[in-house]
Length: 197
Image 1 (cartoon, rainbow, N blue to C red):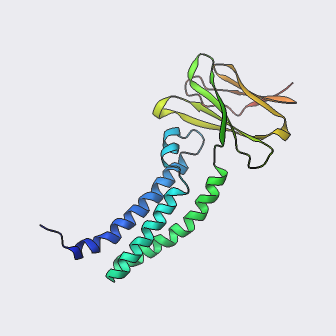
Image 2 (cartoon, helix red, strand yellow):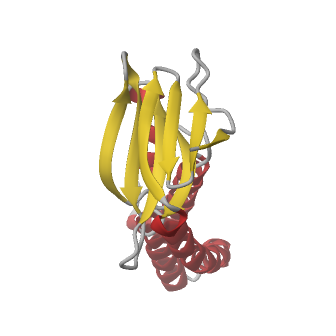
Image 3 (cartoon, rainbow, N blue to C red):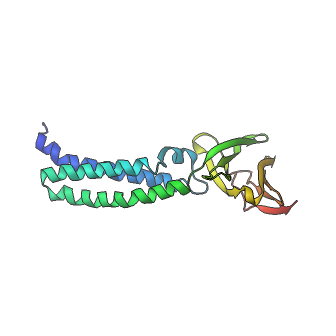
């Protein structure tokens, strides 16, 4: 059975709408991977808060354009709704990209005797005063997970992040130490305890 040009033109808006919806769903998966304990690989592959909503918006507008030429309201109405949704998602995604960025990595240090654990310090400051984003990575390969330990300004006296044992990470400040103990099996950090210097 051969597909005619008219049938292809009727299907095209639905394919474009599917592509737009898929882009938004992939962004949602990536945003969920940004949470505490999320998979690093999923975040790396799917958290693109500028690219994916832009692709969704372009596909939705193309579906509107093709559907309008065909004059089928069955394809035009959902495409219009999808384009409106993309128009709302794009600014929200840009704000999300600004607040959920890992920053420029300044260094990564592995735990003593444990290559599957590492602490990464990144600079997320957009001003001359640096802001240090501390991220703990546990696991290796596709099962690597990340734990956000916070963003610290130099004004707070942040000096360094270093391992004090295979299951203990210490953040050093001018006045105090913040010590995190990791679960030996999963690598999940506790809430951290403050120790005076």
